Image (cartoon, rainbow, N blue to C red):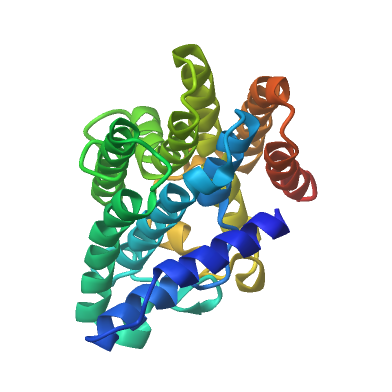
Length: 289
């Protein structure tokens, strides 16, 4: 994990220049280079590796996915969205560069990322690159990531079009699971995976996305700022629909353990130390609370 994080950090720094006008590139790079787990790019790279592909072929796409993720964080923290002053233990982008530049930095990352896939994926053929860009725009757009954010905002204060259970699942299958699906599907596409393998790994990614969100909801309830690197208890105070608010802490933990076991059952077939390590860290942290 540490080696892959260092490799991703190195490539992100290489891919993200600071040129004129410097303010926008500095704002883009600020959030992009904040210390993080780099789960999405690592999962993209590891999927490619465990399917027999050189991870160098997946690196531009992996980095593009991290840019998309950072774009979502910048916009999520804005006063018009979740209004959070901290991200990964540091001031949020809009607190450093102002709201206007933060909006533009998110927009710029959103368009810079697919450009990166196209320009830097020199070892891939045009058909594969087109598939990757399609996946990127699909999972990062109005049918997935943005849809989840919209329903998340609409549901604050108990305003639901669907039932609370359906609404919660929709939010997190789109707002959270979508980018894990993008990461793993992209790694499989780079590797020319068979359709049945892609489907099984996509199922893993969907379940993992929910596992990760339940983990995040639990930690928001019981953790500290030092552990999370962002404001704690904000979801509860703003009346957000979460697994803890809907089901209670103990039932949320029960859902977490059931889903993470399903993740183990799928990924154990592929003998991946990286995916096992990721699951182990989440499981062990929840077991300790």
